[in-house]
Length: 335
Image (cartoon, rainbow, N blue to C red; front, side, top):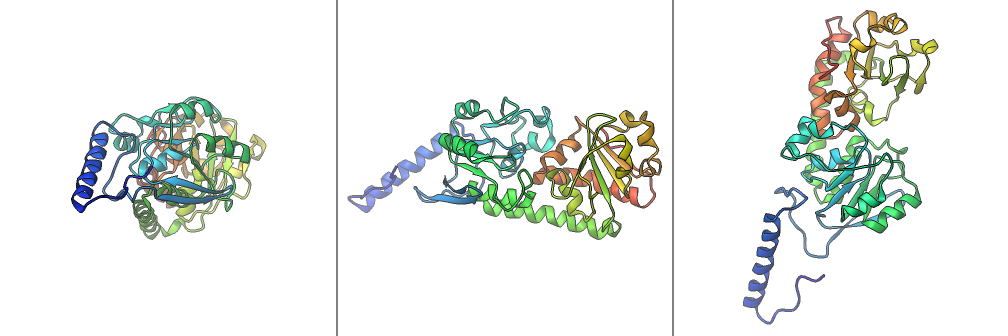
């Protein structure tokens, strides 16, 4: 749609432009799904942003107003840039809307969830999006084509394995699509500065092996490797990871015995009565940290958006330092 046609006089041009701006202001006052921030100046009508990805390119209309996130953690990146999705992927952390950074970004209202353990195409279409993000999700051409029939869709590039786009790349990609690249870069710089500060204060982190055990059952363990978004904080702090990735049987529980261990999904209390686990040196020596499955800390590591990472760093860094220097480690199970 053309907003500006030929004008008969400069005076008429000014009158028409003023009317258009007044109409835009009125619509904003009636409620918008996207939070407008000063850095998101509206470009000229008809402008689009082109985002490259593994299936080609997506042309995104300037500053979309109805954003849906179909990836597992995509809403955390959209929210950080001041846009509240009109729908987000459900089925992953039912308490997401209770997390403090989500409460802050949504004025306590949370983000609407679209039901379904898989991508709910009907639910997405019902939200009437003008942009869909599906970056942190395993997407094939057929799924991409179907989402693109609903609205312009941004998925990950082919440079990374599925669901392993680095947090900063995902944030900058999201920022480009939303016309908020400057804000995205500011957040990347803020988080990286926090990492640099932590590494300078704790040189003992460098090269030490931290095993990240993602589990929901006391006798079922899954080791997360380098590059997994749930391990992003530990990677960025300079920790080395276990070479073996995947399920770990009780017979091979020694794989968890690194310089430090992070149990993501079960509390210290829940693991207290597991003899084989309690025999590990990393547990006996007090070099183990825990986050229960319903804890905000577990959620922060799972979603790994910039605000989530800042939250988690404040909790983790001091206790990781304690674990590696022989000091008592506080119980973060329910933090």
